[in-house]
Amino acid sequence: MRVPAFAPLVASVAALALTAVCSTSALAEDAPPRLIVAVSVDQLSADLFAQYRSRFTGGLARLQQGAVFPSAYQGHAATETCPGHSTLLTGVRPARSGIIANNWFDPGLTRADKRVYCSEDINDPASTSGNPVVSAQFLKVPTLGEFMKGQWPQSRNVAVSAKDRAVVMMGGHRIDEGYWIKSGAFATFKGGTLSPAALAENAAMAKVIAKGAKPYAAPAWCGPRNRAVSAGKAGALGTGRFALTPKDGDGFRASPRMDGATLDLASRLVKDLQLGKGQAPDLLSVSLSATDYIGHGTGHEGLEMCIQMTELDRSLGAFFTQLDKAGIDYAVMLSADHGGLDMPERLDEQALPRAVRVDPALSLAALAKDIGTVLGISIEGPLLYGDGAGGDVYLSRKLTPAQRGLVLDALVAKLRSHPQVAAAYAAGELAATPTPSGSPQDWTLRDRARASFDPARSGDVVVLLDRAVVPIPAAGKGYVATHGSPWDYDRRVPLLFWRKGMNGFEQPAPVETVDIAPTLAALLKLKVPEGSFDGRCLDLDGGAANTCGG
Ligand SMILES: [Zn+2]
Image (cartoon, rainbow, N blue to C red; front, side):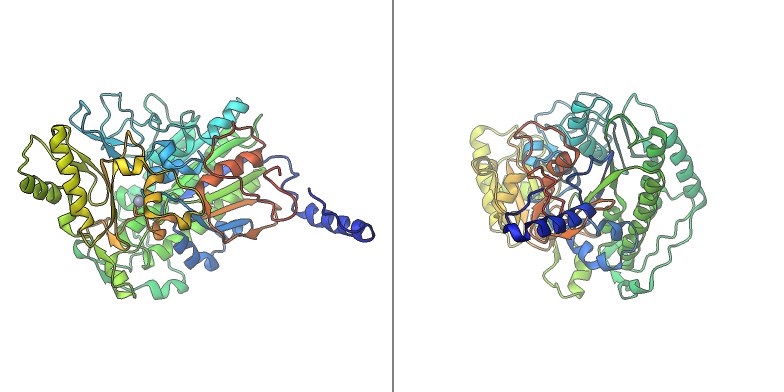
């Protein structure tokens, strides 16, 4: 604690006053927490948080009593699940974590599937990008949990989510127990066995799925959201309440019940493993996927998301109450892997008429056909590889060096001339760009693209679509809205820290999600090698003391 140099007459009074203040906060002087609970709410944008934060009465209300950073940045352009989760507990941006997208392409791969999934084991012949053998081999850096295990071998590193990539990116290479949903039930790493907690949760989930469940009641204040909007083949959306028909596993997953089950499993693991009560501090990572599934399926501004926000708050509250009852000294961090944007059909009705679906002419097939014809190039197999419009585009390896140069120039020129494209960069341009620094809200588009660029994994061209251009050409069931853009609706997320007894504060200035790992490391008094992080420690004390040790 720093005591300012007051005049001698008032010094004793000032010291007394400071002592009084610090005795109620004292976060910096407290012994480190015994359990870190790191929560990611998939697709919880800063905008959604701002819209609903005054309504929260459960877990999210509690966390708002702590340190609140309403403008945390996933600063990079590739605002997808895997890169976003990779920043949360490594403290480094995707350019350094190597996790540049959910999927990237390696046209030189010997297997038929040229697409690489971010958390697959590429060396296992049984693995494909669509049905991966789960592994952390592509994550180039250690996670907080790994640093903890390095210092305290008895520390446990446990991670749960509906998504394997969230488990892997938050947990890293040395996970004691990790569970995600596969074929409607929690699964774990190849060769691993399900713990009694996972088996019990699977049985509980199976029971609900077999029987079906009633729709959720919506709070009265959700009323204005309850309005149908037509979205192509997805039909009328905006009035759903998640009635579950028997045996509809997919309906269970894309509902608030998925978060409930994930937190329920987390709670069982805390109890069975006695997390927070061992020889060393433990880490429990929980990634809650329902907000993302619901955002993709029905957008942000309907009754569905209003119910989801209500239920998320309630489920988190129940989970924290369990931890309280167990008498665990825990600290919570909550953030998100990326934000999101509502579906264009509703945005158009609600004062954002510029929101549109992407022009089918920007599909890779259309671009490849056009460029191939113009240049008179015909090769075996696809000319271009990529995961839809926007993001990384890869050129076929079958092109001669001369053809390659022509295709690259033609592609970049064509993209840059399209009104829905904000920027297109050749890999060489991004490789020559320094990694960004300074406030993430001031980064140029090129800076944002650089922050998720890896020369060995990124595309030959990186395409950034214009603001409010949704890269789904036509709405379909379960997929009407998305994220992945370099715009702030996808980059800005909330960041909250909470520990019992702490004096909360709100800091509206932008911070980054790569600040989380150094902040938690300092709170734990964990020694991490110099230069391990791209981010900085955030002082969580809010008073004169400093949890960063300054
Ligand atoms: Zn998503």
